[in-house]
Image 1 (tube, rainbow over the protein chains, first blue to last red):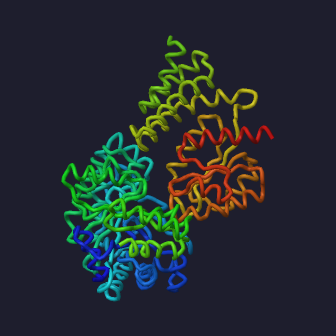
Image 2 (cartoon, each protein chain N blue to C red):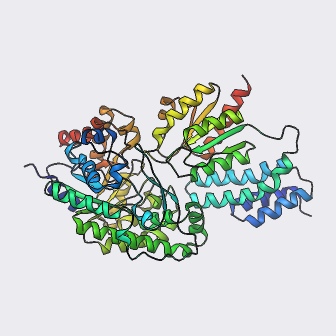
Image 3 (cartoon, rainbow over the protein chains, first blue to last red):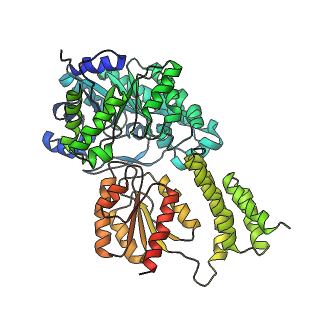
Length: 338
Length: 218
């Protein structure tokens, strides 16, 4: 019997039988083609709750995915901490331009954190999505991981060097990152988010060592997962083979990975440790989705299914110039392969 | 007084062990003892960076350690380089323009590549991060650089690259263009008309030397 997206998604997270694998995008999924179809464009959709919800809804109405997620960018927490942003115009996303703190500064956590910057708009978008699509699909609220927020409010090069030399000097900033993310996630859950997706792009082995991950990222992610009353998906970009067990040990509901990750290797390690955390992934966002064609996406999707992913998702943020047909090809393949 | 080999070893080890003071002392001693600055750079600092590159490839060290090694390397290079450039041809291997494309503020990778070029004797014109398209073109015209290196770290910003490549080639068909960064790859480089793709800093330098050599042979 055909399940709704909600049922399918929740079954996959719990490791229960579903009619087919869910298809979601753990990271941003807006594209220029969806903007045209929906009449909701960047940059307006980054600053207005209604337009944000309208564009995010495309993941369901146009792509046929089993979850919709907001936001599109990764800057809400940093902005609320006082980081200066650079606008990305019509084609790009805002990014952090100036960092509000230096190592040694004490962060005065803003009492009105949830009222700052564009956070109220983001929460409004979640409320709208919950009202309009909440009975059909999973509503995913995206936050940034504790270590990555620290990497946004501090200058990243000096932060990385300090992480090796004197990691204890960074604890305060990671704690503030955890506090901010958890606060935002709780507000998202209250606004109607079913699931929290944590992007922790800096906690990757492309950026730090397993040792630094264990000292400065994992314990704070674990604290965050434990504080939230909703399933938490952790997404880390790039290499993570040597920390995949540590990520699972945060207690997260699932881990979202990129194509570089050794999936059979991860399952082997999980088995040895008695871990059942599902993996989500990992259609190559650049080679297949952006640069490839329908045939290539189908081929890679089939490989992902064979590898044992519990849900199929682009491996990282969808490039906005990706064609719709390449994204719907993921869903078509999952339906056929079933 | 230390032997030449001992000074070179300290330059190398200082980089590998991220000990800026060791590198600074060894670099000063190299100058005092009349050790050739170029030799000190290549057989000391570069040897250290090569070891760092090897350890990085083996995943024994990661980006933070690479940044610390770069810091130590620059501490030595700043002392030694002025003495190298007193040579007749200035010791410059080629001119390179480097920058992270517009909208993208991730410059760690670019800075590591820059370090490789600096230490290998290139004159680097670093445009920084979030660089507008026109700036690459203007800088190329102003400096007549042999090579332009474009970096992007996001799937949302790499899309600006084809435009820059096309316009650079329009203005100067001979200029070589190399792209790098997490979301790009060899196929994209070819598709967008770039002359090369560098998967990491070591490869970037090797390719650059080949490209500049091919230009010289024209």
